[in-house]
Length: 431
Image (cartoon, rainbow, N blue to C red; front, side, top):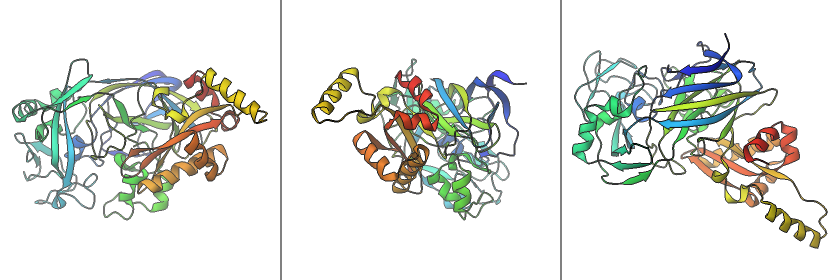
């Protein structure tokens, strides 16, 4: 039975698999309310998970067919964790097969993706449940534990004593959802930075639709997905398979926050909307490789866009997050432009509105090229025109290092209307 609202508190095993049953269906125009588990470090030290994250089970959206798109309206994000840990990583080669995010392996008994148990606290606390060997595929180079205030506006990194106190009750401090199987990373009690203060500005790192072939959730993007090409484990893909099947749901773009709209491709019937990897804060690029991954409550509204085909996500950020040059013009600016045009005998001015295209690839140059090409194809213009428009009416911004980027610019309204999305753009920016 189709539902107006779907409550989600179930998670994948790290794989996004279009052949597995989805939750729902949810009504076109309905709500998805999800209790999300932390991404990155917890799943990274849990070899049982076959991806670098632990995202929600996908939800079938009524009426969504291959070739359509789904507009996802981010209605709210509420951080529920009180303490989390993160930092730079190094890998332990004997503890995985080819890819530490996907194929954790016990170096003693050889079990692939084994269940684990925690023994004490600290960096050697994750042990194989089969033979007892210490097994984490990842360790910190430099790590920190950070606590948040009650209203989740400020965080402070902890000293050794406080980090270890939190480690003793890590699952509770992190508010790990009941159905999550990840080992809480606060158990490691890293404390290499003490007394550092940061602001919270939560956003969603993983938001999108199910790819049309089974792949690890963290690899549903061109940069991390490149690790699957020719991989020695069971989820190996060719470059063409990766390009055609991924939906780029793993963006880590800090503009995917409350109030934003993300337009996602539909590559399987029902779309399969999933969410996870909410971050407490992150500067452009996520240059440390990881940020403060938190548990959260997220509310999403979904709307099917019939016969509107996109290759990857389009973001309509909240207006304050738009690049300066891509913000809608004020009435005063329009009056000044009209006066200038009259002086130079320019008879009419473009009516334009903001739009942001996501691109991914093996490196940032490839990601930018991918975003430029997607923009050109969607709006039926040339890449050189997209380059010009994003240079003088927008910006190129790094989503995630090594290979996620956005190309944002003011596009002519007639092109947005022809592409079928102007009504959403108009709604988002009160045009």
